[in-house]
Amino acid sequence: MLDPQRNEKSFRILLVGDTGGIPILETTWAQRGVKEMMATVAEEKDIQMVLNMGDNIYFTGPTDEFDPRFETRFEAVYDSPSLQVKWLTIAGNHDHFGNVTAEVEYTKHSRKWYFPSLYYKKTEEFNGTRIDFLMIDTISLCGNTKDIQNAGFIEMLRNESHDPRGPLNVTEAEEQWKWLETNLEESTAQYLIVSGHYPIHSMSSHGPTDCLRQRLDPLLKRFNVNAYFSGHDHSLQHFVFDGNADHKISYVVSGAASRADASTKHIKEFSRDNLKFKYIF
Image (cartoon, rainbow, N blue to C red):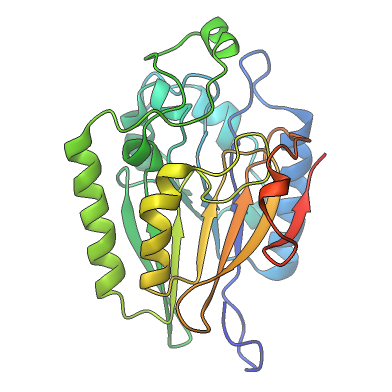
């Protein structure tokens, strides 16, 4: 994240989303495989941090901060020495179907899980360079993908909605929008990163999130954000769009930590100039 022309060591992070396993099995072969590759890369590249972008416990989130799935789907999976770094975590839509506050409270019980509140700012200083990470809760901003609370396994399978239905609490959503705009405006960091579960742009099954295109993307452009990271769609995608003047913004979707989706449902909505990379399985 530093100028590649300089001879300083870089600040390197991993992006991972949708790690939550499945109800039938505590983890998946795909999650184990991704974890092994993460561990290898983290050791070789000296990774300093992981951004964990939601859907942490499938399908219906945790029951409380002592839910054993924190151990079986997170701690026991990501146990490699090279992955014992801070994991900046946010919630996904599936986490909100359970006790999402428990994921915040779990921060007290883990050495690497870092989730101090539903949305928060984390600043890193590295060799004189400042990086601001703004971790937002897109479910509070845009709503969930289903209109049921604490859904069971069968309800999750039957409901086919993909589009967020609007914020459950409009007042709280507006407070977060105000918080985000203020922090973007006041940031003096050389690098400014925003992360949320829902993608702004996606060529896969869920596709773009209209709520974020309408309200978040203009803020990213206005304040020259360097990148927006997300999960939700179970693939790996990289987009680049113009911001202000000659500024470019990268949009990365990394949501295949425990499963993959081969869908290219929305690919025709994007030009080759914008969609730089995609990996589906």
